[in-house]
Length: 170
Ligand code: QAP
Ligand code: CO
Image 1 (cartoon, protein in one colour):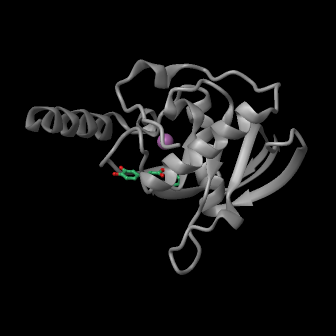
Image 2 (cartoon, rainbow, N blue to C red):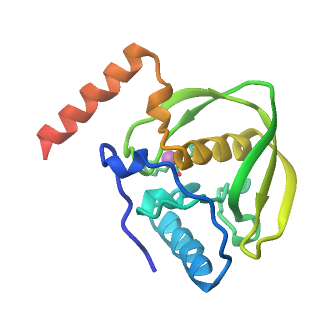
């Protein structure tokens, strides 16, 4: 089922999401709905809070070389914890909750992550480049942080100006 995405400045995006301790059919439905919603909106990552559910779950699906998204490479990440970060990488990020705005953000290039899958299994794995960027972006959502919070003062002004313009146009 496709659900609605909440967008900035909806204050629920500032909630700190709660850890998940019940791995039941309801959680599986949530993850399935997140996937349907992300694909329909043409996203590559989504946190549960973006569909207004304040739980520590996120999904990532990076397209392959042919720009195709495949469910085989879908990552479902619950209760993530970054154990190590290393390196730096800059990437022009966007967000389904901040539509039509993109800006360069600096993140760790490689992370070691501990998380659970939908069956509660604890997994430790290393991620790099675009997957690592996406995971860090989505973990920020779990803590109420948006990528626009990481902009310089001037770039943040640029964002607020563009947002005002968009609101006027409607
Ligand atoms: C987070 O972002 C991310 O403005 C996921 O009009 C960002 O899926 C992961 C999107 C950077 C890795 C690198 C944004 C779609 C999708 C828009 C997204 C839009 C349509 C953003
Ligand atoms: Co986002």
